[in-house]
Length: 363
Ligand code: UD1
Ligand code: UDP
Image 1 (tube, rainbow, N blue to C red):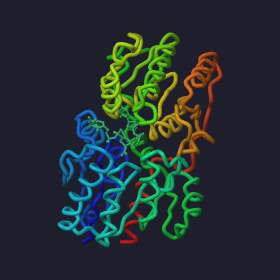
Image 2: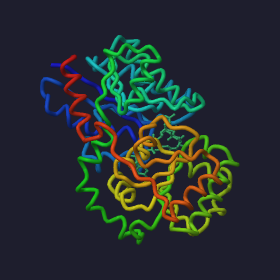
Image 3: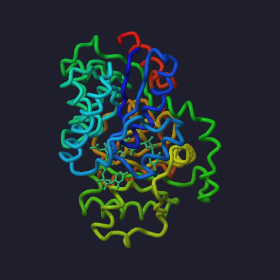
Image 4: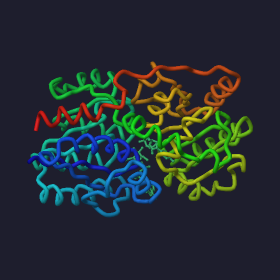
């Protein structure tokens, strides 16, 4: 029997691991697949709701509450996962995405001579001021198996000297979740409960430190949201980091009553809101991919993206962080200038099955 341990710690991790969890069930009991939650995200609305919505079991291990500064969070997770790895002695550790939990656990495992597989490897924004870019570079450089979602990953990893035998273009596990849960998403009643009108609202999310950690940037962003709320309703499920910063800078009263700030939503309701929105305005990584898959216009308020395929073939418009330019782009869309797109290669709902097959073959 072989044992695989998968790491989950943040909202997007749960969504990416759910199809991987299902794919390994096919190989049980010869392959035992365990889940470890690092506790990076701990609010029910950032964690528990996803286990319920995605149909994944409670994790086999939980490392406790691991919030804090980058060093604190990374250090605490490394100390805690070392104990679990020592106990479980997995034949392989799986990490997903680019968050601190990903890098901390991969680094701990390789030093214990435990092989590491990285799902969603190879993405690069080229912007080393983003914590995620550092996490991606470190994780990819020490991983034994690298599964990529789009072809830009092949070039990025080749440029960094990663041997091509380690790299597999398998598609996008985040899209696997969307495909698998299509019917449940369609059954969500969030539009009725919020009273929003189909294709007549902007869905907004912001949580990047470059947008929300600086008072001036956050003030600009709120001014911009107030302005677009005069065109169409704005619904803003708010990330805990952003909520905390709005309170810290005393900006709560500056948000127009036309901007509907609500708590973070569960997976099914949020996907339903994406699919029925006029447009998404975001700085999220995963939402750039989901909107491309669903063919919904997306404006990304960042200067770069690690997911270029969403701009090249998808519906994503990379606007930069100048809210004046973002506003022009949105006005053009409201006037009828809508970007159309196609679905990237291998975003077909079967990425996790391909990944599991390769892993089982290599174990
Ligand atoms: C993290 C990831 C980011 C990812 C995002 C997904 C890193 C460096 N960043 O950013 O790449 O896009 O998750 O959402 O790993 N908080 C709570 N409760 C929670 C979660 C967060 O209160 O359940 C608050 C805490 O004040 C915490 C802060 O948000 O200190 C930041 O959380 P953290 O996980 O460090 O970073 P994110 O901004 O969530
Ligand atoms: N998401 C959600 N509820 C929300 C906001 C986002 O379910 O209120 C989903 C979103 O559709 C995507 C994932 O969470 O699947 C992305 O998480 P986030 O934007 O926090 O992280 P990133 O992808 O930027 O790392």
